[in-house]
Amino acid sequence: MDNRKLGKNINLHERGHRTSLRIRFDKDIDSEVRRSCKEFVSFLRKEYFFPLRVVVYVKNVKKLIAIDGDKVYGTFWSMNDDYSVEPHIRVAAGDYNDLCNKWGKDSALTAILLTIAHELTHYFQWINALKLTPIGQERQATKYARYILDEYAETREHP
Image 1 (cartoon, helix red, strand yellow):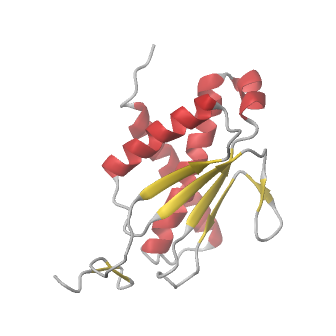
Image 2 (cartoon, one colour):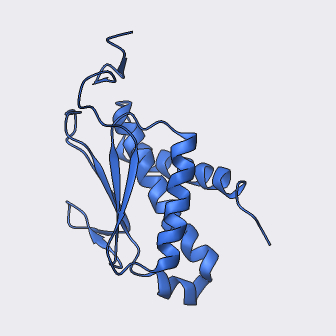
């Protein structure tokens, strides 16, 4: 088992190899968003194995600019087939108060957590070197994000 690799790409016993999921916040992120995201990430760490460290950056912006110039709520970045460079995720959460006014607190937080789960699905697609079309990647990410949030909701208290 010394050469145990994931997807023939990542040697899990290599020295200096970092694993797990981390989260970082812009300093002005709403405290409720911060609390909710930390609890969600704690759940994810217990339920899933992250074979290569991935950091989720929660940004205090309404939308992010993707590499292709599109304005989006979340991005997953990796070095394609280079598993020696740690990937990262960026999630926009600067519209939290707007979403609260529009949909209510629970739905606003759910939207942010769904974005995290969606981008983490892209992480697992990359880790597992899945060969999907761009539309297939997005459909799978949307489906699994909802599944993950449903699983998470079962661990939460409901009024």
